[in-house]
Image 1 (cartoon, one colour):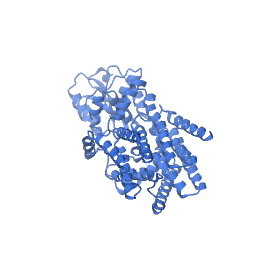
Image 2 (image 1 turned 45 degrees about the horizontal axis):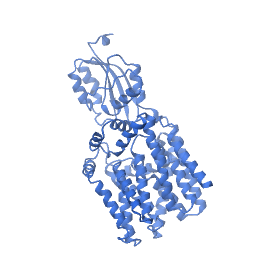
Image 3 (image 1 turned 60 degrees about the vertical axis):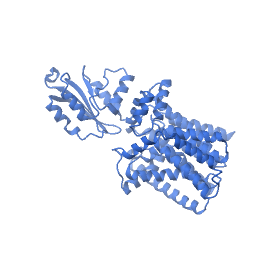
Image 4 (image 1 turned 180 degrees about the vertical axis):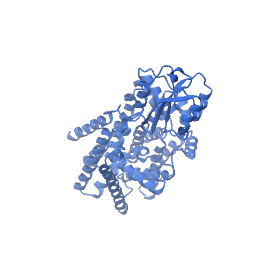
Length: 495
């Protein structure tokens, strides 16, 4: 009874930490994009995502979630928060398969409850927690099918992993890890191929179901994205260390005083040394693959290793794209402590990580930079808005942000005009529009085509416009400049 009460309290803690202040954080570009795409038809969502960088399932789920619960910031983020809490079910079930005692299971659940990274992504309108929930479900049903050959568990495994790979490409790393586990089980003679035939068949079915999307997947990864730069060995090393800092001390650690940044560096090196030392001892014990689910550690090590290799060519934020392996990182840390160390060491390690993560939760909620967002830009324009002025900006981020604000607030601001997808197109359109005498031009420096921004005012001067007001804001993901321009022959300019 006592154990059940503790687990119930952990569930409540998990939910409270993910819902607390859920509306406060800036709804940044990716979230605004999620909202905008969810407004379209299912057919258009599939068509648009085929030219984007993620599969379509999350946007379709969000679309119907909005139909049921509205498109308020609270409602849309609640979807991610709910999935973050529901993931606790599978983390509990997986931990139960691995650990025979309640204590390590409780350690795992508590570290997940106070995971700064999961709390952060539980308050974003993105697919990361849907992917987490689905991949956890697929791993649980896979692990359980190793114990119980029931076809029902394999069907559930296929359904969950099928949905996951249509949610985020990095769930393919989980599929690959499962395939490796099956191969290792045969190599180590734990199982024969005939015993694992059903599992191999399930993996093949998942791949077959992905055949319609594989051409899109290969097209997208072959062309890459312009903002993903090639990394040096040093850059990749920093990214690797940042992965542990983000996971246990919040993604906002970089905005904290210098002593917190030193602490984050210590935590990174400590965890890296701990995981390498434990892995070395574990490999020497020759029990990496066994009937006791020791191969669960591969669900942490393999995706991390592959992602590091990928990041050499295409920079990725590891804590974001590998948020699906947070539970396996925690399970691996606790698994090693219970396997290789005495009870006192286990408890001390847990308490250390719990205190560090709790500090990360405090940083997450106390940091003010996350609130320095597009709403300040909109408020400035609203305070200085003149009748019949139009707003010109790139449709994505600031354009869609103002559109969302206009839809959900009583405001005199119009929805921004779509004059083009970049500044050059906007200026070319203005040249042919003699009916426009005054406008706001918003320059979003997160744009990939911001090199023309420095000459924008000069070009507008040549077209007969003068800037009468301007302010620059430092927001997420980059600074934004809002300028008000008036044609020189306009009475307002003369006044």
